[in-house]
Every structure is written in C-alpha cells, then in structure tokens.
Image (cartoon, rainbow, N blue to C red; front, side):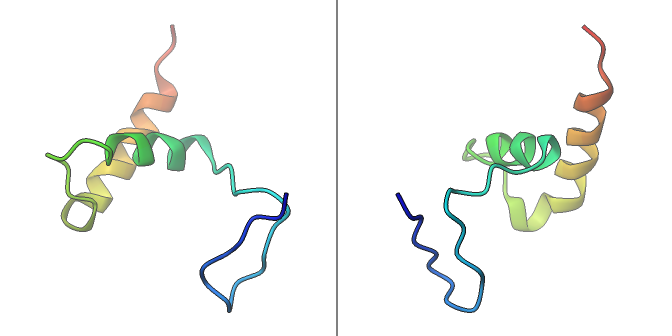
Amino acid sequence: MLWMNPFSHEKIHPEPYKGTPENIIVNELTNYPEIDYDDQTEFLFKLARKFQTIEI
C-alpha cells in the first residue's frame, strides 16, 4: 500500500516514516493533552534523550 503524503512537495515513501527513538518518544509524550509541543519542544527532546540513556 502506498502511503499518501499530504505534503506534495515532499517525497512519498512506500510506507509511513517510522522515526528515530527520540522522535517516537516525543510523539508519545505529545499524546497527553497537558503537553504543548509548540511551547515545550526543546524540553521534550531533552527528556527523550534522557529516556534513551536509562538502563533497565
């Protein structure tokens, strides 16, 4: 199935962009209504980088 890109100036990929671990973490955090991506972008990416360094 071909993924339809709503941005015609960007290349259309055969499947949706999966993203980096950092982007996936930020995306999941922005699912919470209390988090405003536009106001907290820098903080969210700092937090995502910290999550990646936690050893389990």
